[in-house]
Image 1 (cartoon, rainbow, N blue to C red):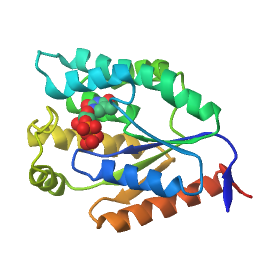
Image 2: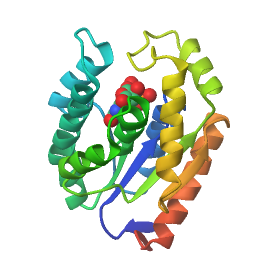
Image 3: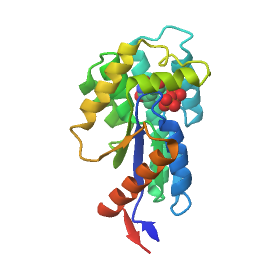
Image 4: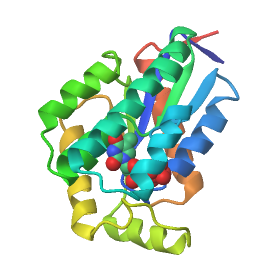
Length: 216
Ligand code: TYD
């Protein structure tokens, strides 16, 4: 049995249709059996964030790329202030379905906004509290598209974008993560149980190696 030595922030990232939300939910369920765990998400895990989520996903009014990014940044600032920082202070393992890297990939690489500016604003919105480790769910755009179509749910504004947009987002994630040493790669093309097992094993190993977990 293990215990946390301090609060840990884990982000889960991937393109739409990567299976990220299913994994984040099942992983948080499994982790919560032995560790104090909080499942959260961007956009939308605060009352303000829920309103922002509706704005950016439905796009009933025109939103230019800079305004779109700033809405995600506002959601992020509220999320860190109201949810993430208080939980980390209580030594909880916080697992977030998307965080700042989604803005770099979607608004930076997808929409062509300046990544240096995004990084500066993200850092400020997050009070310089970056994720300790990121799980990146890797799938090909073809697999992701097939899943999105099969879901039979109304598509979000991002899911309605052309395939080139998602390809740029994918290239964005790959380019951001190849510079980092704290990214765990998970194949999202396995069945959901294997994705969960793979992510759980890699994460626990990483937490032990980096002294976030100690034996009871
Ligand atoms: P959501 O339904 O949560 O999608 P998913 O479950 O696939 O994460 O919608 C979030 C959408 O918002 C998703 O298409 C990615 C996009 N997004 C950005 O473009 N920038 C961001 O900073 C964040 C956090 C999300």
